[in-house]
Image (cartoon, rainbow, N blue to C red):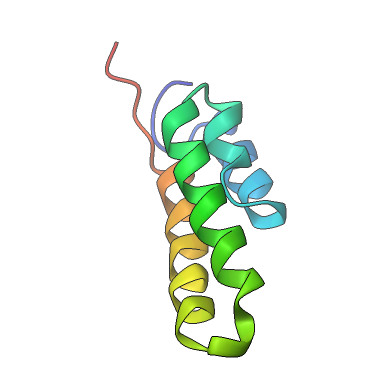
Length: 74
């Protein structure tokens, strides 16, 4: 992936809309992908407790923004 707003980042952000962490995986970032997926899926699974679902929703939104604004520093 190259700069912020590139086509690859837009595709990664769209992937994150459907499954949190998938966009980071598309970008080749395994650890953030696992963290976003575990937190979001776990929080959504505990939806009846309200607070974990809210935290998962915030993490899901952050995963989308993170994929869209990612800059490769190498």
